[in-house]
Length: 632
Image (cartoon, rainbow, N blue to C red; front, side, top):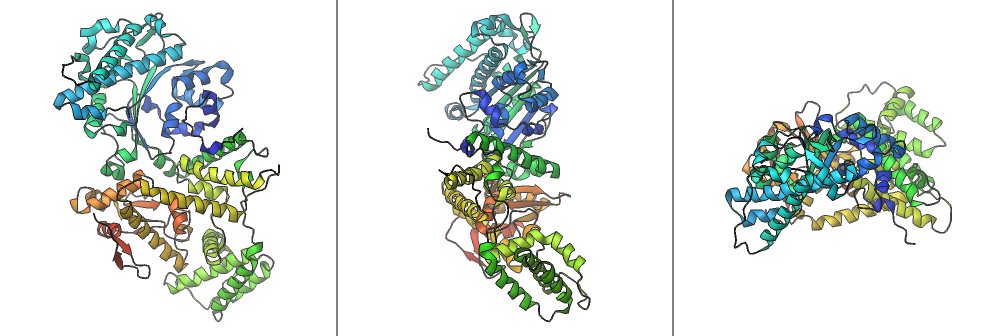
């Protein structure tokens, strides 16, 4: 039997059983959804791998049917609680009629075939037919009936605009036949030479079918059977710009009582919208949900996301069946083994100590460190690195100290406690020790993207499997082994960038220049930034918004948009919203040897960013740029 790494299985993949999807799905992600999302139109946006499609599948009729069954409610208790809070599962009954339709089914060809209003009407006709078919199939699934039994399903009210063709909506079976026949004829027409004209019903002047399937409007054997409705239009970014406008305006005009979700990848949204994070029309729309940004916007949400990753990893590692592993963290060391680096650390401490000779302020601190941590070379090295950071800050003019006052033990302990993580970063890179290891680092590496976490975790589990192959015993991957695996995986990701954009060299130049700021700040070893170095840049919100509409900065907006859509950069607003911060994706931090923490950024402006897209910053000069061989 061929072993398949469970971390390579995506939640939204079609698998043998829906229960297998539920076994891998973490219901905590459902907290992204609010009650108003079932009553209004909502844009649900994400970068690839953030979990959008898996989230949508949780609301499919097949999944809702399974979790609502009495025998399954205890097994899927967490997801059932969420669905009950939404009011879409009640007393073992599903009260939400949901349907999902992909917009990646060749709708863009309509744009090329027709002109003016005909484009819209043909698009609406095809969507109306397919929306009707999707809802009617969901009704069959939820009510556990055959297509013929749709004759017993009727509509409480037919929208006034559809009364002229009331015969097609006398019952759900008739509607199903109308929709199937209409879609078949329209698709045949689109595939033909189109010498003959096709008559389209008045119904197709808008997306009226959505109102037909609103909650409370479906009657089965004389009784209303659904309280809410939800239409998910996934891959919305695949439509042309004019088609997206037609559909979103039609949904707004309808003022349906049901929910409509526009699922889109950020790579299909305009650069201006990606950068400003404005993915909807405003008006009667629920707030735009950007899955990637949701988790990073609040400290509690960050913690929740880390718990989600732990749950995902533990469930998958149990499925792997390797050495009876129950927790993913059990296959990797979370501490550094410094036995091989003892001599290097000892030499490094000696170098720092020699550089502090003659500085009275540190005499007591040095005596304290040497006596307290005489047998712990690693901790002693971190303490000495903290003294080095203090001295570097003084030399950079960051501290105003009375050098005649001796530093006491409690003072150095306090500074060490606050700066231990930064000291570790500097020591690892100065001494060549592994830095990227442990479950915490893997979570940081996710950059709030589930698929990215799964990618690195798959490589770690594969390394563990190879190490333990044939032994029958658990042998944790050492910090060095993890570090090597992660770096190797990152190199593959860097090479994969070649296939994404034609102007990838411009993007790489831009990202490399951002990283150069971080590398220079690391070399100063002042520890003034969270993590120990810059990992991004900031620009004033006002200047960024003005730049979006300034043709001079079209290149910058284009590069920023692509970097955000592909998750090369992560966008954050500072607390006062005066600045927008753009951080490097954490895998890029590994590639450039930067820390994984967030918080360190350098202020920039649009003109400087433009130069950073076109020119390569000189390694030895802070502001000097050298031209690279690319054109815009």
